[in-house]
Amino acid sequence: MNKILIFDLDGTLFDTSRAIVETFNAVFKVLKIPLAGDENIRATIGLPLEKAFATLLNIFVEEPLISKAVEQYQLQYRRCILPKAKELLFPGVEDGLIALNKKDVKLSVATSKFTASATALLQAAGIDAVFDRVIGADQVSKPKPDPESGRKILEYYNAMPEMAVMVGDTTHDIYMANAVGMRSIAVTYGIHSVCMLEEAQPTWIANCFYNVLHIIEENILK
Image (cartoon, rainbow, N blue to C red):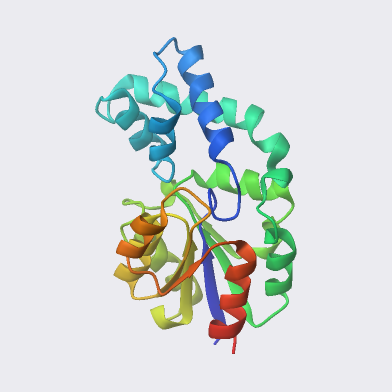
């Protein structure tokens, strides 16, 4: 049975934090909403859009303004982020994924983005072909850290948890992996701090994507 590697996107494969903050701010300006502050926006990265906006605006997810904000975000996302997708890849990601795709391993994505946005980002960066499956927030009833997205990927491959490894930059990714029973690699170059990630108890910790590749080669593919 092939090993399965599941990757988060923002902060793991893509250095999108600054672009995401810019996109949120563009939405606030278009909708004439007071700016929430860059650090507050950064703190919501990794959450589904509805929950992120609800947190920043301090309103319920069901409020009509949330759906308007999400719709506007999608428009701004295509304008602000997709055109520079390839340059947003962290060093080593493109070549590393291509190399992994040639080995005895399956690659998938579990993200809090909508599936269409995640797929568009992967396509714009030219790395979509290496992934068998992309599970976005709109394909699950409960997003990360709930285990549903991880379980869906395991079901797709008809695989047991011990065959899979989650790679992510937030505690949401690590807690999801722990709940499913799979191993995990926490990356420290993304959104959450080393201290936060250590508290989530990942199997391994990596400080760059090259380190991720080394961990995979030495501990997972052997």
